[in-house]
Length: 520
Ligand code: FRU
Image 1: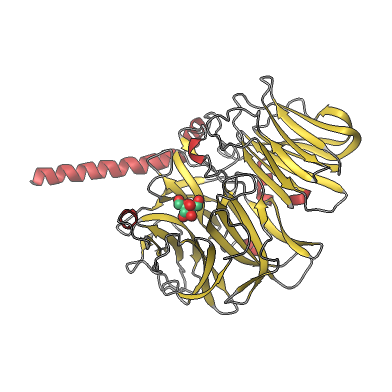
Image 2: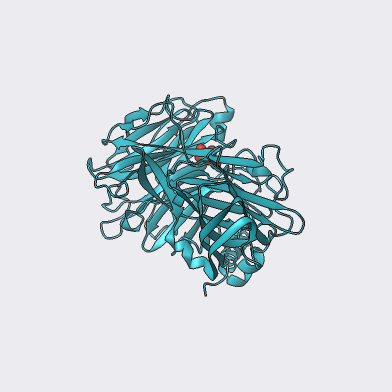
């Protein structure tokens, strides 16, 4: 018996050591380099070392570290029992993988949620001098679901007093029980200074609910929003709510973000937003019930929310760069999915209405290597922008008149990705129908469109292309499109075309450095 016990101990110790070593190995630059060279592997975006990820979770900035947790199935390349994977970054672009933060337990799987820094130790999980990080997440009980019950999703919390390195689940979970609605999830919590309370926004099937708490442990309902507002082509998920001062104004407005699946403007998943006011109890929307506004018109930006406690009160957003319509079928291995690049959100007024503007967070400029300043060029038909182009890590910007134009990234195998503007329709587009592999799902739409909102007499655009994705910011981030594509060989050429003779200004092509190599 004793021998058996000793053997078990040895096995546990060895296993423990091995996983510790693996974690250390994971962080070594050499391993990361070999690992991050697979076909279609993002070079500029965060992706898990291996296996499945979906939503970013628990985004919190604390002690100079940006934490990124994410929905993770560590044993499969498709969705499965959810854990919270974990990574940290000091600059939002270079990431270090950490061990899984939250494992499923007897209450259920760990679905999406948020994390806060409980600065005043309202929860009592830390001390005034060492305030705790508190994660608020959805438990999903497969057992209850299989038993035919409706109350299988409820909210739980966990805390960390060591900078997010280890987490303890609250002994009295769940903190918010379910009253019989099957979709009751994705809590995003923030501190509401005016009422000195925590506020939670929760997705409940076809609307959101607002709840408040003095201590993150006991919650009371404030209000509902959204039954008839915005898009309702699918279930509401992963909401966010934050105050923001519109550009050039002194009074704050409130922005509510709600992901919806399906029902997106280009098929499948997408994220809508509402601008209005929140008085600590109720959210009132500026626009009428039938107005739906999309944060990103591309098909591949879902479940995104903003960081808690970001420096200078910035609204830093990260999304899951995929779409439930085909996420589990994309041709990548040994990992599936990535996040978008970080974006700073702001609010701007056009024709008496507020719109969210998304731009690449300034930290992304850390990736810039060689810069080719093309300056101003005359385009009459087609010009090559850069002879040594590399679509697998580049950032391209230009300013054009409001006329039809297109930028084509292509290769000699005749694979191409076209980004452009259709003046007659006042619509931007990305055409990925001949960009490489697309047979893996019939839902992988080729032509994707976004309306132009701006009234400016020039179109400024910036796009960032990685090995298998492009993020396009038209009109300084007023119309945004994010799309995946899977070329068999890298797209290594770039041309700009315009039917009319036009002058294209401020043309720049920047080569970007891989995030998994050591910063120069
Ligand atoms: C959104 C979502 C969330 C849920 C999680 C499960 O993509 O469906 O609503 O919490 O994924 O992984």
